[in-house]
Picture 1 (cartoon, rainbow, N blue to C red):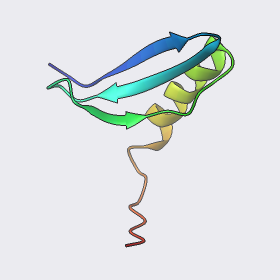
Picture 2 (tube, helix red, strand yellow; picture 1 turned 45 degrees about the vertical axis):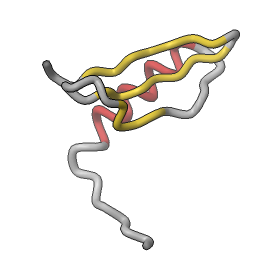
Picture 3 (spheres, rainbow, N blue to C red; picture 1 turned 30 degrees about the vertical axis):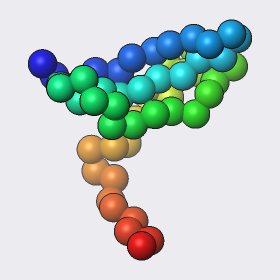
Picture 4 (tube, rainbow, N blue to C red; picture 1 turned 30 degrees about the horizontal axis):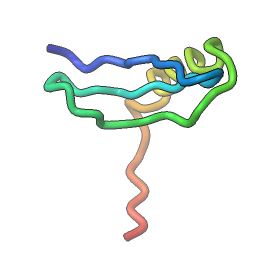
Length: 58
């Protein structure tokens, strides 16, 4: 199974998790006030994450 974005709603807020193929959550979004904003957040991760560098601040 491939990774997938899971969009959820809690009260009036929306958020998403990115789940790995094994079902493990590998990223969690902030909370958004609209569904459109959450979907835009998913689009942003899809567009920006492939080339994102690692900023190791340990």
